[in-house]
Image 1 (tube, rainbow, N blue to C red):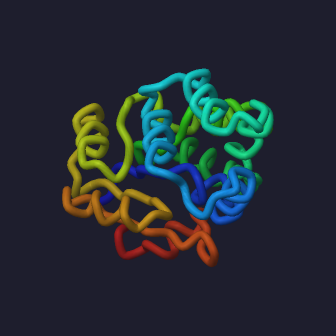
Image 2 (tube, rainbow, N blue to C red):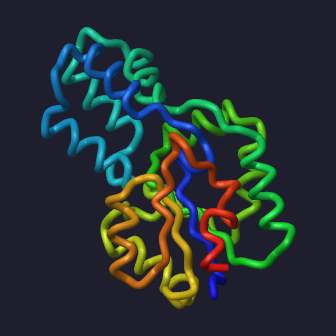
Length: 203
């Protein structure tokens, strides 16, 4: 019996344009692919091991022809709209109080600040959850096993009573090893609001 729902944020509630953001960034940087030091900086920033200013300083030093505004715009390019019917879904789940609700997202300070500035109901959405874990705040990231163990331990959860919803297969594959039920949502043709229809065999 499912007692806890653990949700990803991007491409589950808020829409992202991952491919568009990558294409835009590579055009801006005039590169074919991200170099190793860029991948490392991005990861460190995502787990809060470097600050926003340190992150921006890294990119400004690497691409001196670019302004800070260029870099910030490219970084936030990935974030698109947040359909209000998904907010309504989260609010209904919270009001019904049938499940413990947890959000678990790989994200960073700039993205969250951008969302706070552009999604008027962000705080209303956040209040729907019993716990709201962002990678840069807890210094852990998916798909590393320690982030899932952290959530299980912090909330005293039985893995068999949890359902984890995430659009990235690498993440759902990792969490399955701990005995947690998963829904690797396909954001191109599925919507989180249809959870109880698509996963009805679990409820």
